[in-house]
Length: 110
Length: 114
Image 1 (cartoon, chains in turn orange, cyan):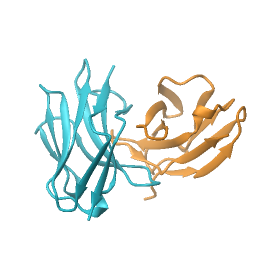
Image 2 (cartoon, each protein chain N blue to C red):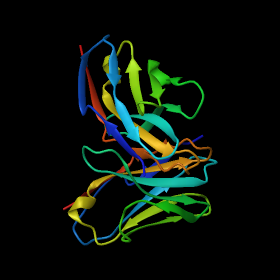
Image 3 (tube, helix red, strand yellow):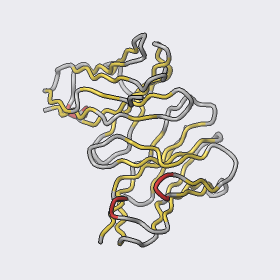
């Protein structure tokens, strides 16, 4: 059984660019959640997808968007990147209430 | 809305000493409570969770936590720490019946010194 995998692990972008982060959920998990973890902070909930539909959203602007595919993998897209978007982006999958986290994608915006 | 306060940002201890990492929460509804550990350059791993029942919860790696409803606390404890316990620890809450949308504290950095 493979766990949650995220790609890329690290990337560097400049202000105004767009980024796509990817997450493969753990086998059998139909729910994927995305969190942003800024340096020295706890993770903050961005949004959650359940069976390809958005199922809740945190306090993030519309330039943060996502998708979930039929195989339950997911993408996080961020448009018009800002310096404050620099963070570790964590994906978590679940099926019965417990979240299983990937190792994250570290985004640096210059 | 829920919020979580981790009272100590850093906790240094010596190896084999006991440790307590403090967590208080606020919520207008009943909540589920969690502790996660994050090792450097890794994701989060669940240590333990309180959903209902016994207020003393045992987790992995010898950690335990006690839910205190009157004090709205969920402190994490270990009687004897190891060097390998050095990591960041996060307390989190989720409203009961919610769909796994966790609210995290800012974390406590535990450093175990030889």
